[in-house]
Image 1 (cartoon, rainbow, N blue to C red):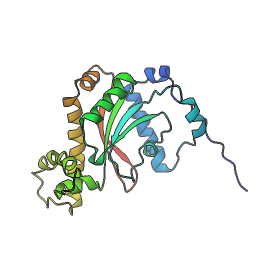
Image 2 (cartoon, rainbow, N blue to C red):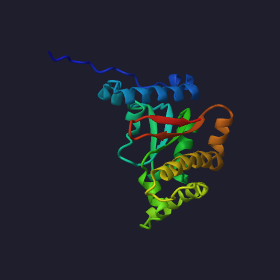
Image 3 (cartoon, rainbow, N blue to C red):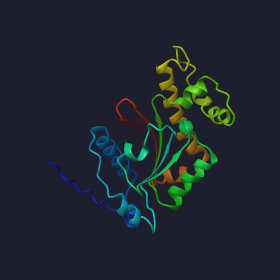
Image 4 (cartoon, rainbow, N blue to C red):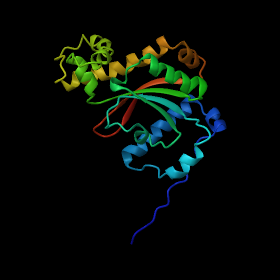
Length: 216
């Protein structure tokens, strides 16, 4: 017998609801969403209704910086729908002026309560940086990952892209440095964090099982 499952009519967040959220609330919400993602218990959503409800304004919970990797579907990973998240994507989840400006808009202007930088297992950008790949504008982008590689100089094993352990260490260090760069290069976000208005957090996505590990 076929069972028709009605989509959940989840409301797009209002300005008041966003205002009442704390950074800790948002972080907890993302963790809970990731648990639903890994268990295959994703929320059913009526996207057509959410599109219509979101026309007159947006009040996302967080701004997430992710790598461009197609295997990391950010909204799905955290079980979020239309209007829930700002998402910025760039290879290697590195920080630049445009990304920082987008984060400042998301938090200072649009009211997001969390800045999350998420790296991921098997990151091709990190491997390319380790291999010192030279390719047009990609060369300049990969140079931004070099500080993470240099910060892992004390690693005793093979420091090559063919060593998964070393690659993983650099991936996580790169996330930590991106978080540090946000604080150093954006006085706006740094002050907001110091005043408790937002949290700036790093995370790592395990591509083998879909689990997100948060660095707090």
